[in-house]
Image (cartoon, rainbow, N blue to C red; front, top):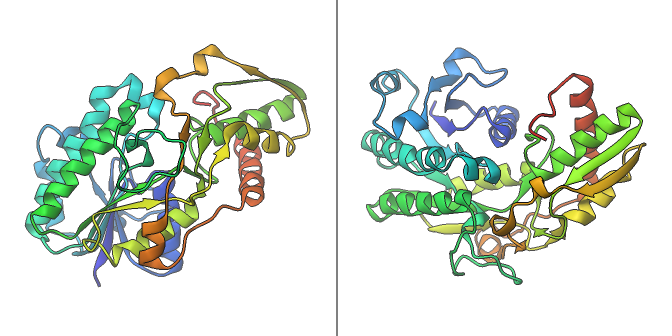
Length: 322
Protein backbone atom coordinates (compact mmCIF):
# COMPACT_ATOMS: atom_id res chain seq x y z
CA UNK A 1 0.00 0.00 0.00
CA UNK A 2 1.28 3.46 -0.84
CA UNK A 3 2.03 5.76 2.06
CA UNK A 4 1.54 9.48 2.63
CA UNK A 5 4.90 11.14 3.27
CA UNK A 6 5.02 14.00 5.78
CA UNK A 7 7.80 16.43 6.57
CA UNK A 8 7.58 18.15 9.92
CA UNK A 9 5.49 15.27 11.24
CA UNK A 10 7.07 15.59 14.69
CA UNK A 11 5.80 19.16 15.08
CA UNK A 12 2.55 20.58 16.37
CA UNK A 13 0.60 20.45 13.10
CA UNK A 14 2.24 17.17 12.14
CA UNK A 15 1.06 15.56 15.36
CA UNK A 16 -2.54 16.49 14.64
CA UNK A 17 -2.19 15.29 11.04
CA UNK A 18 -0.77 11.95 12.14
CA UNK A 19 -3.69 11.57 14.54
CA UNK A 20 -6.20 12.08 11.73
CA UNK A 21 -4.40 9.58 9.50
CA UNK A 22 -4.24 7.00 12.29
CA UNK A 23 -7.98 7.30 12.87
CA UNK A 24 -8.52 6.81 9.15
CA UNK A 25 -6.09 3.84 9.21
CA UNK A 26 -4.11 5.57 6.46
CA UNK A 27 -0.39 4.72 6.41
CA UNK A 28 2.10 7.56 6.76
CA UNK A 29 5.85 8.11 6.85
CA UNK A 30 7.49 10.92 8.84
CA UNK A 31 10.60 12.61 7.49
CA UNK A 32 12.38 14.83 9.99
CA UNK A 33 15.01 15.28 12.66
CA UNK A 34 13.54 12.92 15.25
CA UNK A 35 11.19 9.98 15.53
CA UNK A 36 7.73 11.44 16.28
CA UNK A 37 6.13 10.47 19.61
CA UNK A 38 4.37 7.14 19.35
CA UNK A 39 5.76 6.34 15.89
CA UNK A 40 7.53 3.11 15.02
CA UNK A 41 10.95 2.97 13.37
CA UNK A 42 9.23 1.83 10.17
CA UNK A 43 7.26 5.08 10.10
CA UNK A 44 10.30 7.34 10.17
CA UNK A 45 13.15 8.44 7.90
CA UNK A 46 15.76 11.14 8.68
CA UNK A 47 15.56 14.55 7.00
CA UNK A 48 17.57 17.60 8.06
CA UNK A 49 16.50 20.49 5.84
CA UNK A 50 19.17 22.81 7.22
CA UNK A 51 21.79 20.28 6.10
CA UNK A 52 19.99 19.67 2.80
CA UNK A 53 20.26 23.41 2.10
CA UNK A 54 23.95 22.75 1.52
CA UNK A 55 23.54 19.51 -0.43
CA UNK A 56 21.31 16.41 -0.40
CA UNK A 57 22.32 13.94 2.25
CA UNK A 58 23.56 10.68 0.65
CA UNK A 59 22.58 8.59 3.71
CA UNK A 60 19.03 9.95 3.50
CA UNK A 61 18.79 9.22 -0.21
CA UNK A 62 20.00 5.65 0.29
CA UNK A 63 17.25 5.10 2.87
CA UNK A 64 14.62 6.24 0.37
CA UNK A 65 15.19 3.17 -1.78
CA UNK A 66 13.88 0.96 1.02
CA UNK A 67 10.85 3.10 1.92
CA UNK A 68 7.24 2.58 0.79
CA UNK A 69 6.37 4.56 -2.35
CA UNK A 70 4.57 7.83 -1.56
CA UNK A 71 0.89 8.31 -2.35
CA UNK A 72 1.47 12.01 -1.76
CA UNK A 73 3.60 14.48 0.17
CA UNK A 74 2.51 17.17 2.63
CA UNK A 75 5.43 19.49 3.32
CA UNK A 76 4.90 20.95 6.79
CA UNK A 77 8.49 21.35 7.97
CA UNK A 78 9.47 24.97 8.58
CA UNK A 79 11.04 27.39 10.98
CA UNK A 80 7.63 28.81 11.79
CA UNK A 81 7.70 31.11 14.84
CA UNK A 82 8.18 34.69 13.51
CA UNK A 83 10.36 35.86 16.45
CA UNK A 84 12.66 32.84 15.98
CA UNK A 85 12.99 33.63 12.27
CA UNK A 86 13.80 37.27 13.05
CA UNK A 87 16.59 36.10 15.32
CA UNK A 88 17.88 33.46 12.86
CA UNK A 89 17.33 34.70 9.27
CA UNK A 90 19.96 32.46 7.70
CA UNK A 91 18.51 29.39 9.36
CA UNK A 92 15.01 30.44 8.25
CA UNK A 93 16.25 30.72 4.66
CA UNK A 94 17.87 27.28 4.85
CA UNK A 95 14.87 25.47 6.36
CA UNK A 96 12.08 27.34 4.56
CA UNK A 97 13.61 27.71 1.09
CA UNK A 98 16.95 26.13 0.20
CA UNK A 99 16.54 22.80 1.98
CA UNK A 100 13.07 22.14 0.50
CA UNK A 101 14.36 23.04 -2.98
CA UNK A 102 16.98 20.31 -2.88
CA UNK A 103 14.55 17.91 -1.24
CA UNK A 104 11.89 18.44 -3.95
CA UNK A 105 14.46 18.02 -6.68
CA UNK A 106 15.49 14.61 -5.42
CA UNK A 107 11.94 13.56 -4.52
CA UNK A 108 10.47 14.48 -7.91
CA UNK A 109 13.25 12.76 -9.81
CA UNK A 110 12.01 9.55 -8.24
CA UNK A 111 8.26 10.21 -8.17
CA UNK A 112 7.51 12.93 -10.77
CA UNK A 113 3.72 12.47 -10.64
CA UNK A 114 3.35 12.44 -6.86
CA UNK A 115 0.88 15.09 -5.57
CA UNK A 116 2.41 17.62 -3.16
CA UNK A 117 0.89 20.15 -0.79
CA UNK A 118 3.48 22.84 -0.05
CA UNK A 119 2.52 24.67 3.14
CA UNK A 120 3.27 28.40 3.07
CA UNK A 121 1.63 31.08 5.24
CA UNK A 122 -0.75 34.03 5.28
CA UNK A 123 2.26 36.05 6.44
CA UNK A 124 3.34 36.41 2.79
CA UNK A 125 0.72 39.16 2.28
CA UNK A 126 1.02 42.87 2.82
CA UNK A 127 -1.21 43.55 5.83
CA UNK A 128 -4.58 45.03 4.91
CA UNK A 129 -7.76 46.18 6.58
CA UNK A 130 -9.71 43.90 4.21
CA UNK A 131 -9.68 40.09 3.87
CA UNK A 132 -6.78 39.06 1.67
CA UNK A 133 -7.41 37.06 -1.50
CA UNK A 134 -4.78 35.08 -3.37
CA UNK A 135 -4.40 37.96 -5.86
CA UNK A 136 -3.45 40.54 -3.24
CA UNK A 137 -0.07 42.27 -3.03
CA UNK A 138 2.63 40.12 -1.47
CA UNK A 139 4.76 42.17 0.87
CA UNK A 140 5.80 40.31 4.03
CA UNK A 141 6.63 42.45 7.05
CA UNK A 142 8.91 39.90 8.73
CA UNK A 143 11.63 37.34 7.98
CA UNK A 144 9.22 34.43 8.39
CA UNK A 145 6.87 35.79 5.73
CA UNK A 146 9.75 36.65 3.39
CA UNK A 147 11.19 33.15 3.53
CA UNK A 148 7.77 31.56 3.10
CA UNK A 149 7.21 33.72 0.01
CA UNK A 150 10.57 32.66 -1.39
CA UNK A 151 9.58 29.06 -0.65
CA UNK A 152 6.39 29.53 -2.64
CA UNK A 153 8.33 30.77 -5.66
CA UNK A 154 10.59 27.73 -5.38
CA UNK A 155 7.63 25.33 -5.24
CA UNK A 156 5.91 27.05 -8.16
CA UNK A 157 8.96 26.52 -10.35
CA UNK A 158 8.46 22.77 -9.94
CA UNK A 159 4.77 23.20 -10.72
CA UNK A 160 5.62 25.09 -13.90
CA UNK A 161 7.74 22.10 -14.90
CA UNK A 162 4.61 19.94 -14.85
CA UNK A 163 4.62 18.56 -11.31
CA UNK A 164 1.45 18.24 -9.23
CA UNK A 165 2.16 20.86 -6.57
CA UNK A 166 -0.27 23.23 -4.87
CA UNK A 167 0.78 25.95 -2.44
CA UNK A 168 -1.48 26.57 0.55
CA UNK A 169 -1.44 29.67 2.71
CA UNK A 170 -2.81 28.86 6.15
CA UNK A 171 -3.54 31.79 8.42
CA UNK A 172 -3.16 31.49 12.20
CA UNK A 173 -4.10 28.14 13.68
CA UNK A 174 -3.79 26.75 17.17
CA UNK A 175 -4.91 23.99 19.51
CA UNK A 176 -3.69 21.72 22.27
CA UNK A 177 0.01 20.99 22.15
CA UNK A 178 1.19 24.12 20.34
CA UNK A 179 4.54 25.56 21.38
CA UNK A 180 4.29 28.35 23.96
CA UNK A 181 6.28 30.70 21.73
CA UNK A 182 2.96 31.35 19.95
CA UNK A 183 0.58 33.90 21.49
CA UNK A 184 -2.44 31.90 22.64
CA UNK A 185 -0.60 28.91 24.17
CA UNK A 186 1.84 31.39 25.73
CA UNK A 187 -1.04 33.21 27.42
CA UNK A 188 -2.70 29.97 28.48
CA UNK A 189 0.39 28.32 29.94
CA UNK A 190 1.49 31.39 31.87
CA UNK A 191 -2.04 31.88 33.18
CA UNK A 192 -2.08 28.25 34.31
CA UNK A 193 1.20 28.84 36.12
CA UNK A 194 -0.13 32.01 37.76
CA UNK A 195 -3.29 30.18 38.78
CA UNK A 196 -1.18 27.53 40.51
CA UNK A 197 0.73 30.28 42.32
CA UNK A 198 -2.37 32.20 43.34
CA UNK A 199 -2.02 35.08 40.88
CA UNK A 200 0.51 37.59 39.61
CA UNK A 201 1.47 39.60 36.52
CA UNK A 202 1.03 38.50 32.92
CA UNK A 203 3.40 40.38 30.63
CA UNK A 204 2.18 40.74 27.07
CA UNK A 205 3.12 42.30 23.77
CA UNK A 206 0.72 43.89 21.34
CA UNK A 207 -2.95 43.11 21.97
CA UNK A 208 -4.72 45.14 19.29
CA UNK A 209 -3.56 43.01 16.33
CA UNK A 210 -6.30 41.22 14.38
CA UNK A 211 -5.82 37.65 13.20
CA UNK A 212 -7.80 34.98 11.35
CA UNK A 213 -7.66 31.91 13.59
CA UNK A 214 -8.66 28.33 12.88
CA UNK A 215 -8.37 25.19 14.96
CA UNK A 216 -5.44 23.09 13.76
CA UNK A 217 -7.80 20.11 13.34
CA UNK A 218 -9.67 21.92 10.56
CA UNK A 219 -6.43 22.97 8.91
CA UNK A 220 -5.03 19.44 8.65
CA UNK A 221 -8.35 18.10 7.39
CA UNK A 222 -8.23 20.77 4.69
CA UNK A 223 -4.69 19.76 3.73
CA UNK A 224 -5.87 16.20 3.18
CA UNK A 225 -8.88 17.34 1.16
CA UNK A 226 -6.69 19.56 -1.02
CA UNK A 227 -4.13 16.80 -1.64
CA UNK A 228 -6.67 15.19 -3.98
CA UNK A 229 -6.60 18.42 -6.04
CA UNK A 230 -2.82 19.01 -5.95
CA UNK A 231 -1.74 20.71 -9.16
CA UNK A 232 -5.28 21.73 -10.12
CA UNK A 233 -4.83 25.09 -8.36
CA UNK A 234 -1.62 26.99 -7.80
CA UNK A 235 -2.44 28.89 -4.59
CA UNK A 236 -5.08 28.51 -1.90
CA UNK A 237 -5.78 30.41 1.32
CA UNK A 238 -6.81 28.31 4.32
CA UNK A 239 -8.73 30.64 6.59
CA UNK A 240 -12.15 31.53 7.96
CA UNK A 241 -12.42 35.07 6.63
CA UNK A 242 -13.19 36.30 10.17
CA UNK A 243 -10.78 38.41 12.20
CA UNK A 244 -10.47 38.36 15.98
CA UNK A 245 -8.54 40.79 18.18
CA UNK A 246 -5.76 39.15 20.18
CA UNK A 247 -6.69 41.17 23.26
CA UNK A 248 -10.30 39.97 23.10
CA UNK A 249 -9.09 36.36 23.02
CA UNK A 250 -6.88 37.06 26.03
CA UNK A 251 -9.80 38.58 27.97
CA UNK A 252 -11.92 35.51 27.30
CA UNK A 253 -9.04 33.25 28.27
CA UNK A 254 -8.57 35.13 31.55
CA UNK A 255 -12.13 34.21 32.48
CA UNK A 256 -11.16 30.54 32.38
CA UNK A 257 -8.55 30.82 35.13
CA UNK A 258 -9.20 31.29 38.83
CA UNK A 259 -6.51 33.77 39.76
CA UNK A 260 -5.99 37.48 40.28
CA UNK A 261 -3.93 38.47 37.24
CA UNK A 262 -2.66 41.90 36.25
CA UNK A 263 -1.93 42.29 32.54
CA UNK A 264 1.07 44.50 31.75
CA UNK A 265 2.58 45.39 28.39
CA UNK A 266 6.25 44.46 28.10
CA UNK A 267 8.37 46.40 25.60
CA UNK A 268 10.54 43.34 25.04
CA UNK A 269 7.50 41.47 23.71
CA UNK A 270 6.70 44.11 21.09
CA UNK A 271 7.95 43.39 17.55
CA UNK A 272 7.28 46.75 15.94
CA UNK A 273 6.90 46.70 12.16
CA UNK A 274 7.46 42.93 12.12
CA UNK A 275 4.00 42.49 13.68
CA UNK A 276 1.19 43.13 11.20
CA UNK A 277 -1.84 45.17 12.30
CA UNK A 278 -4.31 42.84 10.61
CA UNK A 279 -4.03 39.53 8.75
CA UNK A 280 -7.38 38.06 7.70
CA UNK A 281 -7.82 35.81 4.69
CA UNK A 282 -10.43 35.59 1.96
CA UNK A 283 -11.58 31.93 1.72
CA UNK A 284 -13.59 32.34 -1.52
CA UNK A 285 -11.28 30.17 -3.64
CA UNK A 286 -11.25 27.45 -0.99
CA UNK A 287 -15.05 27.45 -0.80
CA UNK A 288 -15.34 27.24 -4.59
CA UNK A 289 -13.10 24.17 -4.71
CA UNK A 290 -14.23 22.26 -1.61
CA UNK A 291 -17.73 23.66 -1.10
CA UNK A 292 -17.17 24.81 2.48
CA UNK A 293 -15.16 27.21 4.62
CA UNK A 294 -13.75 26.14 8.01
CA UNK A 295 -14.91 28.21 10.97
CA UNK A 296 -13.74 28.64 14.54
CA UNK A 297 -15.63 27.80 17.72
CA UNK A 298 -13.81 30.30 19.95
CA UNK A 299 -15.22 29.07 23.27
CA UNK A 300 -14.37 25.44 22.53
CA UNK A 301 -10.86 26.46 21.47
CA UNK A 302 -10.21 28.50 24.61
CA UNK A 303 -11.58 25.72 26.82
CA UNK A 304 -9.17 23.31 25.09
CA UNK A 305 -6.18 25.64 25.46
CA UNK A 306 -6.91 26.24 29.15
CA UNK A 307 -7.23 22.52 29.94
CA UNK A 308 -4.11 21.72 27.91
CA UNK A 309 -2.14 24.47 29.65
CA UNK A 310 -3.08 23.26 33.13
CA UNK A 311 -2.00 19.75 32.26
CA UNK A 312 1.31 20.86 30.75
CA UNK A 313 2.16 23.15 33.66
CA UNK A 314 1.26 20.45 36.18
CA UNK A 315 3.58 18.04 34.35
CA UNK A 316 6.46 20.48 34.75
CA UNK A 317 6.77 21.70 31.16
CA UNK A 318 9.11 24.67 30.89
CA UNK A 319 7.70 28.16 30.36
CA UNK A 320 11.00 29.42 28.97
CA UNK A 321 9.57 29.92 25.46
CA UNK A 322 6.35 31.51 26.72
